Length: 560
Picture 1 (tube, one colour):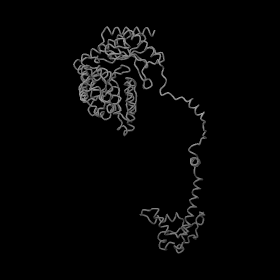
Picture 2 (picture 1 turned 180 degrees about the vertical axis):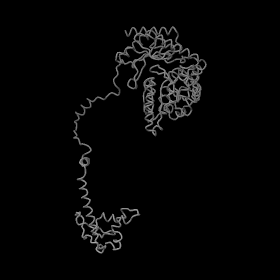
Picture 3 (picture 1 turned 90 degrees about the horizontal axis):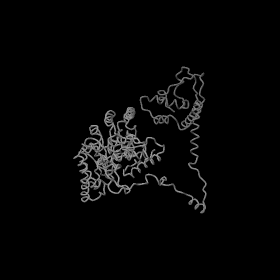
Picture 4 (picture 1 turned 120 degrees about the vertical axis):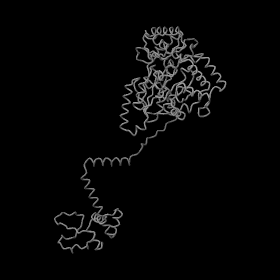
């Protein structure tokens, strides 16, 4: 029961209209307003006010103070006796139930249907089993033995016919230099990538032999684990000086060079724009990087720019992501699969226009193009500092083993910690490093050999024009170009057999050629079957004429 002073101060009397329909849940024993203030003295019982009104009055009486449910409960506890609180709680619960029923009738039909479906789904989840028990059937010993005898394991690899070209090897005896002995027959070598004829060079062999006596055969350790020899550091310095870059790093395996360099810089979420004709080592590097790969048509700068513009629009939509996303263009100087040269000046323009980095793979162009054999950058007169990373192997022109990357110091040093082939493979044998150093000495002493090589390449290229049933693929100054069938049979195996017949025909006449080999199920864009013709500086005019005549005769005989 409130005190009289509290009721006068905090509770305002209510004038009732007898014509207004009352809520049956409320009880009211007051008489209509007669204007006499004495009849509204605060002697009423608390049952005459519903709980919501009390809360409202209390909230109004505490204006200017921070209210909480705890405060209101405190005041209600002071207002009601225990019996009154129990009565009001029952009345409040009854009112809540009425409101729920009213809301149920006023709710839209689709809302009720959705709630019903959810309730049924929850009931199903509660009472359904998470798995179904299956009846077990015990096999007899005889049934078990029969099943074991019938079971045949799947082969680890698909079946390969015995006459598959990859299973038939041409055995080489002796050095694969200018003349090569294949299956016991001496032939003119138009198959090995010995462009500058340094593989059998006496100076190179003597240098390698002296290193063999000093250091032994191998290294038995990666560069970071007692695998760094003084000749490795010397070779890196010489390569950096030859290429006119700040620093170089060498790998012990040519294939692993670019395959390790790409994932060292490009990570998940980064974007790489790459030519469709990229060689297999580039493809493996892209796969290891787990980056977003966008292929553009071979040497098609319009298609590349289209992709760059699309990416630029995406970057504008999400500038926060664009700030942390790196973008690369990966191309080859001379493409191994097509013998085409990349349009490097246009690529450099796009680099600065669209803010991307360029990785240039020069395994085929290093030691071939340019006045001093420095590759496609020297060929086009492009500043080498415009290229972020140059990669090449030492297994072609230098006639050694391994590969190298060169560029700015901070770019190269990163590979010493992140290049997988550098960190985890045994380092390059010292005798091969010494041989590469001597090969660089020869290249620097006699730069005319690059001019002679390009002249011979052009001569062979023009001489093979018009080969019956064959089409020449590549640029005239490439040292390794392709001959493919003008009209394919529609079957790759049939085309390969036809080309193999041409190679065998030439081999019988002492001209060694080779078919370009690919991992057919692994290549992203599988090139068509071709015969690869390799030109070296040691081939004479007479030998070139003999080889060209033999190839045309073989094509005419086999294809027709």
